[in-house]
Length: 502
Image (cartoon, rainbow, N blue to C red):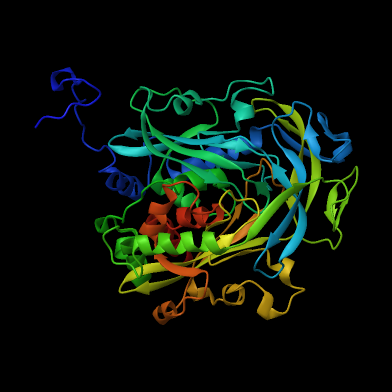
């Protein structure tokens, strides 16, 4: 018996497009090769540092504190007291009331950044001499403590790349806004959250696009291998948050044992290498982890309601700044900016300035020779879906010093008291310098004994790096701080870190 669909005969059915080989099947191997290439075709890592230092010296950068009421283009709305831009674009500082079913504090108010548009964070990739290189930018951001950091090829809000500011065109943006239409091959593409404690449901499109034609090299941009970037991830405040987020979206596989890197080092490095292998055994299956996270999202009760900034309980809002009455958490301050290398060379804006340095840490332990890290299902007031996978510890310790130890974040004491020999990775990394002033976290990976995996407190799970990496490829499963730590655990990164410490 023949079956016809929509009244059309089989002969009228259009021919199916010829299928092609899955282009990403060899990507982990190509990334591993780039992670083993300690020297790029254009610059050695030493030459890069000289290039980067020259851009910092020669750039015309100035960031000056200014009262909020004096910021050009910004004002407090009469009705709500919210701090808004005259264009109605970019972002606003509004109030939020939050209620949670758990945590050290279950109800509070705070200012929060509201930016209801999706930005683009994109890195161009290209093969040189058979090795993938990545186009990175020396980018000035007003909130960076050292002003200049290494950023993605493109780092732009929709307001920026649609030129609401009236400035110059964002360089290379066309490779990402027209990706998949002949300009290159997409290697990674997913929507990822911004910092969920300070942004209200803000997300960015994280992309890596491989190009095959010649690409013009503009001033302030440089091609680096994954190995070179990994070495820079071992240094304080060099690779910015947006670059770390995009790098975490790449399906990095295990290192090549012949490269003399992670595969040839101590037991921890070998367990780390196997942790990146999707074929390695894990304590929990992927489906088990996803089911657990879905259950956490379903059961958690966290409600965030926008409220007027004027009269926000617990906060003082005046023409100079916005501050918590106890001096904790963060402030919102104003700055005037001069930057000769940006699309707009002068502007004013508010910045959120945390009080204290944060801590973001994974506890890590081997399970049958495969490294596992302990993640938590962490609710954050600004996340679309309430809960995402987060580091074992993610907090600013000083915000909880008024609480008794049993009410402070789990494992914070373990991380802060860790012996130097147990710290397998450590660096200070900045949050997004375009919105946050001096926001930095001490990022750590702390090794614990193998029998630690027997303890899996509520809201926590042990996962491999391959599992965590696979979850990043989808929308908003892994939060910003966990993506940072994942990028810092590229096998070449830890190998470099251990080498420099020995």
